[in-house]
Image (cartoon, rainbow, N blue to C red):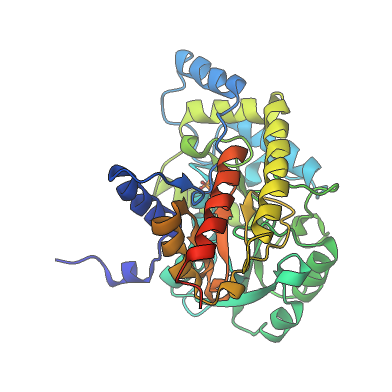
Length: 393
Ligand code: PLP
């Protein structure tokens, strides 16, 4: 017996692989600093935890409506309308899911046909290409330009729009680079897409974690784009709620019935007491989240400058998310070997850029979801390692 052949087209996430190797080394007594996993190291704000406990006591322990509790869908519709300055989002367009990943999965499942071409960022969240391949679609990796905050190469996008192009995936702020795409670039992309039957997935899961004066610009704000854009968002990163599994998609009206059918056929609904916690996250105080973002900024400033001081490392300052993505081209080896050497020899767990696409083969991703002292210690270990390492050519 063997699994369906389609399963061989699915990829995995490198972070979980490195985590399990790091845990194995720890079991043998090695001290590892974990900078591989992309989840905030802060507790979920207490008022959100309390709301979940209250909801359990009040009996939110049964099935709920397929696309989510009306009260949460309404709150999210209102919030998305105001934060993206976009045409009024109707609560019926909001689909609540157990994390942002299922919203992404449903969006792609509901729109892609075999042979469709999907323009996606390279480097990028590996699940995009994995799902496209799984569905028989063709990923078309778009190289990001480091000198332009890891924005798309717009000429490449224009040159690769074909009659088979069905989707473009945007992710700003961006995993793994921390880049935030400038409004002018997003407007240019919209100009290229507005008259074409192309669906845009705008993965905005890191929207709240931005270090710029202006919030990241959403393509859904551009009149005419809201009918072809699916916004993916959730609470995992913004409210340190990765383990709760709570996310959502904002779907154009022509897609909501299709997504609803997919939910009926898979998870039925999202845990209702978790949704009530989500309501507290939307409507309650945001001070804990703001403190978290301020701390990420402090870590970014310190860690990026420490990395840049290490011979062979060169780190563009990320404007959002909580990742540092240095070029290690100066080390003279590929990033996968470097990931392995840093884990086993320096005791620092990070991810090779190649886990995010071909363009990442000379970069590393460090998650700054660890304390400032640990980040400083990690930079010190890497620096000491680089002085003695035989990996460097
Ligand atoms: N999109 C991006 C770009 C991510 O980095 C992640 C998680 O790492 C997700 C989506 C998935 O988020 P969730 O944990 O809410 O499913």
